[in-house]
Image 1 (spheres, helix red, strand yellow):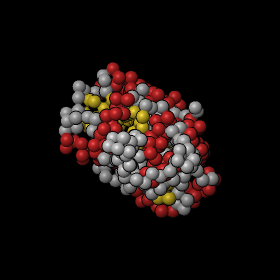
Image 2: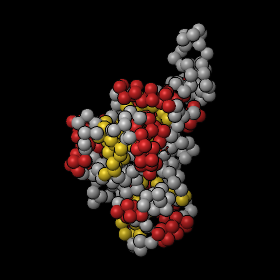
Image 3: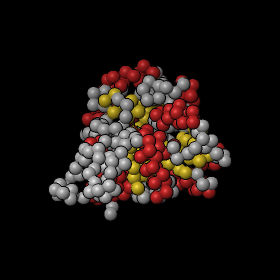
Image 4: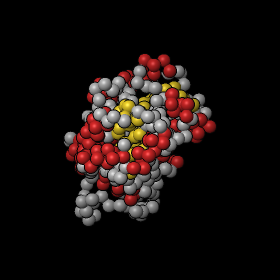
Length: 378
Ligand SMILES: *Cc1c(COP(=O)(O)O)cnc(C)c1O
């Protein structure tokens, strides 16, 4: 089955008791057994839920994995993955990382003896030089947030395989429509389904998809033991969102291409970060591992001022000033005072995350309206 068919049909079947074409929301905590242990595969809803199961099968198909596991949020999914490690193990992660992922590693898991180091991963040779005997997991985000660096997934996976290191790719920014890391050698894929998979800014949800049975079962055990499950209504919303994933992401990518070109010519803008530009350092890798260049764009102002950037955010009318991304509506953010405000200023600047950097999540509105809105604001 091709991707555009899988989003609608994989894992989905009419409800056997009524024929309902849409997966029902099984809002139940337990299941009646014919006698002790004599049940239909469902015992207690922390362990199994039919709405969740359909979504998990759908996600496994989209990412070409063995199995998917859904969680209450993207970070709950990450929490379960890090619990595959033990005290003394080390995580090597992308430096330009989602802030919440950084906080989970540094503020929570460090206390339990799991160390993390954050390094640029655009140069695979450098990544190789940073691996030591304790490195047990490489955590990749690509494209990165908010600098839109591109990391070569298959090169890093080849390196990791030689040393028996697990690789997890946070595929939130690309979505499986643009990139399937398991096909490039990754062991695990993480999603904040809050973003493109849900796609309508109405649900917080996460998922892990495993390439093999062994990690899938280990994670399933961790989830059942720790309990970070999503509710059935949330699973229903994500399942519903995925049915139009291919349409939404493609339109967002098309809009983003036009907006990036508009920004590039703007006299007040000093640089536009968008992997679709031929002179973007990750362009060739992006072309190889992605089907299009995504719908996230960051840009910087010539005057470089914190306040000028913040003013633009308060002037846009269609672009809503908000954290998050990946919904049908376009969003605008100021990383230095919003998503990345907790990073010390020196570290932030050293990584190229300047005071006047603005991040856009391009939605599916009419592109001319979006450009007009940016034009009047900038
Ligand atoms: C939002 C996000 C997360 C965290 O997901 P939640 O659903 O908010 O817990 C992780 N990674 C990336 C890249 C994100 O954008």
